[in-house]
Image (cartoon, rainbow, N blue to C red; front, top):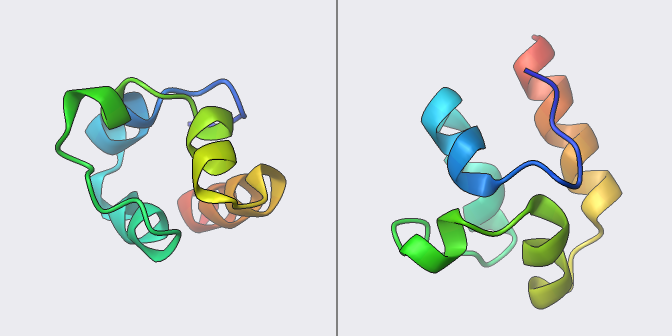
Length: 65
């Protein structure tokens, strides 16, 4: 699975639940909330003031290992 800015967070968590800590680190503590699961990575990063490219790179690196 390759994550992009347009990937929906719920899709990521369903496919790779072990990525949850990456979202918790950025302050996204409402991962069970239907609204947060429906956001794209880019949308969530904008709300939480996180660089989307850096987060995507970290997650894709983790998934590639």
